[in-house]
Length: 346
Ligand code: TXA
Ligand code: MG
Image: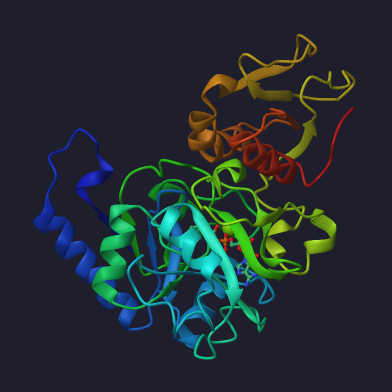
């Protein structure tokens, strides 16, 4: 594995376009020869392979230990024609892409026949997104074709928001890791299916993420019906909704916002909560902070690094307190519930 540090990895360093360009060209060459490249996006780090190469994509599943029935997101540049990725670009799909790309929105639509079945878990639809991070965009421009990439973590573990997280998780299973500094949003993209509805098209939220669902259609100017589905009924459509996902190795339990967790948990217990939103917990529990509910963007940005750090501290149990907030809070709470494998206290 080669770790290539870009100048953006250190916010205090002088930008080095020539050195960065050479590293991106090297990574693009590795992708073209069917290799695996981990790269920063604005949400989390991705583990990329050429989407049109079933052999290269198979290496992603092997590196992550990811089951073949969990489909991947295809990454594109916003101005690429999509008629070789999706079967047809519908009006609502086009409007959402125009409004939110590049950015943390993944759109699911019927796939073009040229997308290999391994990318979509043999399903009829494909997930597509145009990432906003300059390194991801430069890598896509250098490769010149779509790149399939899941989050660059071991399957079901906490996602990677730094190059070091990728190295810790995947090591030599990856050919190149591009270090572009910590991901700024810190939580994955919002995944939305664009489907035929009773009256035109409708949107189904498959995964809450860095784009708040409240902001999805604000500037759209077209009437769409947004459905936030019951997680159980949509499990088959989006395996990322699996309840055990984004999980630390330490036993983790979630406590609803405002509720007081039971005090009888044995051993060393960590209470992980927003500092201004703490329930009353036994004095022997150790506090770790998620940040402030008044700054949920910072909570999202630091969430996975905090979960990874707390996981290394050797606690017997981690109790995470949900924020109960809307907007980004819905995505944060979704990840906290999954970190707890759906085990809800109180
Ligand atoms: O922010 C992100 O989305 C990051 C960066 C790297 O782009 N990627 C990411 O990929 O989170 P991954 O594989 O960890 O999560 C993709 C999610 C999963 O929940 C998967 O089940 C869902 O998208 N998905 C992918 N293709 C789908 C499809 N055709 N239909 C429904 N859900 C799909
Ligand atoms: Mg993932």
